[in-house]
Length: 118
Image 1: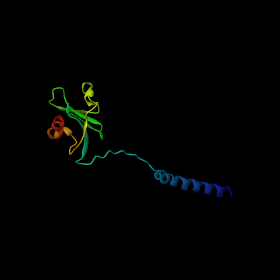
Image 2: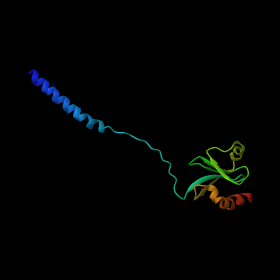
Image 3: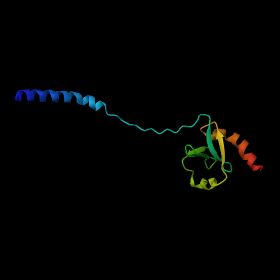
Image 4: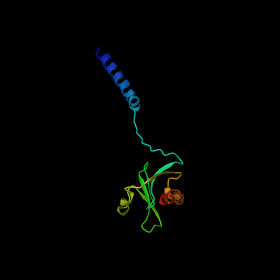
């Protein structure tokens, strides 16, 4: 009887040991991904025409000209000197570009000038 129990125990251990890698591979991993989708050719902005400042609500990015007015800048926050310009007066606009300053001349022609004549 003792030999029989020993053989049975040895076989049971061998089977259990062989099954461990299979059981380890059956564990599942859950991965969560967040994606922000913006339709190609359609980007919404709030345009502050008095100072040529744009805000993209979907990406929460501001676009503005540097202090010399020569180069466009962008960031999640405006420089402190510009923050007072965006408290009121923004116009919702839709553009076909991810960089609103690429259409700035068009925006000025269609929004800024028409607002100045009102």
